[in-house]
Amino acid sequence: MISVITPCKNIVSDGREPFFRKMFTSLFNQTYRDFEHIVIDGASTDGTLDLLQEYKHKRCINTLVSKKDRNVHEAMNRGIRLAQGKFIHVMNSDNYFPDENFFSISLQAIKDNHADFTHADRSIETREGKFVGIKRGDERSAFFRMPFRYQTMLIRKGVYDEIGPFDEKYDIAADYKFMLEMLLSGKKGLYIPKVYICSLDGGITSDRPKVIREVTQVLYECYGKQYGLTKDDCQDIYLRKISPDLLSKINVHIPDERIKESLNFCYELSLH
Image 1 (cartoon, rainbow, N blue to C red):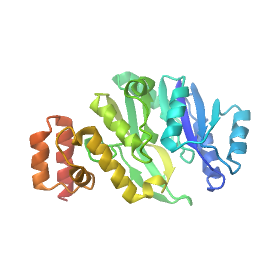
Image 2: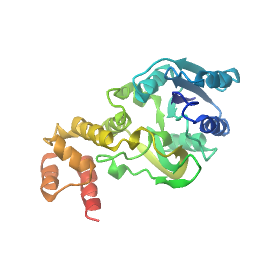
Image 3: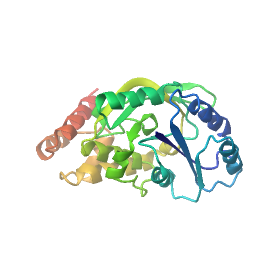
Image 4: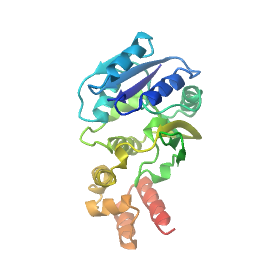
């Protein structure tokens, strides 16, 4: 069984009700039907709970929790703790599946390849339905930026049990930290080169200064401090401003070939 977790808050007042309903339609159009849907609401005050109760009465929501939270990652952790499935998928309240076979194809790929998780591509749209672009998964970029989007992922529940929950001190980059910890622990991923999720443009990641601060700290915590990199080094890595001197420092002091290969890839990108 798959546990689908949807964190949400104040959907109605934010004008996201139509997208929320589109999400539900795409979820229940999936050809693979053995899933539970867990919705974690952050104590909405705008009529969102009435909307959620509507779907719970239709038995489209298996578990509904409404409780104040610090951020979306605390909500996601609550959902994961309640999950009964062997696999986890996080479905944002304003995302939708453009492909009805997301679950079936992802599950089969995990089983066929003995993988711990799958990831795919994400399409971004405006609220008016205008196409913005596609974010493609690329594990080569893992150690300097988000390599793939968690909305496109199906992950074995055991991975969460082993690595632990999302770090709730991060409002934005907790999912990136989790992915780095997952890769550093040797978990095997499989990339499916297809758009499996569509999502709205914007959100908390539009706060660019905060993104830079949090991602810099994540890089420093996950490997920078261990291998003698400063926070300024880590910020330059994220911003793709790796100088020849920093590249030399990376290649001399970091023994992990996965990190070195990723950062050398980052350096090559910065030259173009």
